[in-house]
Length: 212
Image (cartoon, rainbow, N blue to C red; front, side, top):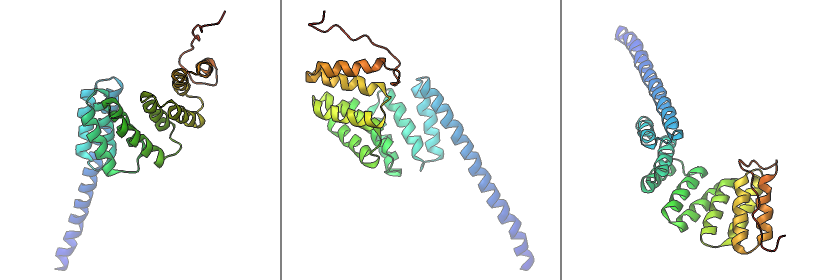
């Protein structure tokens, strides 16, 4: 019996090592599929990206990142129902990820479900009160609903967190414009020409009635 137990020790070690090797190999394949998926996504080859992220999910079904990235690819190609389903799954795995609520909120917004979009953006903000993008996205939905005061309040929050993001000023200017506050709209649009705002464009403020 003693000799047999000695024989079992190296066998046990071999089993452990083989499992570790299989795990390591799966991890490498997972990383490769994720990298390929990211590359396809950046090139706007969304169908190929979806296939690669599907491989990630098959290899690591309890890792939310595969579902999140596939959801983003589905959303980018306009398949909002599948995107929402993937974001749902990601949130089942990690309900504390504020970015996924934001991602799902955008899918709901594109689908026209504005109340659900507002709810998701608010959940993202509740988890992370410093998440400027969620304030901005919620502001956009309020603006679509012609709730300009609420939109401006959210844009203000986004700007307070990240004052260098040009799109926040651009959108707040639009809200001011539709609110009838042309002076503040022009003030915000003029900020796009300042060096302390990271704007890819420089704009010329349009002619205003009454100007000479």
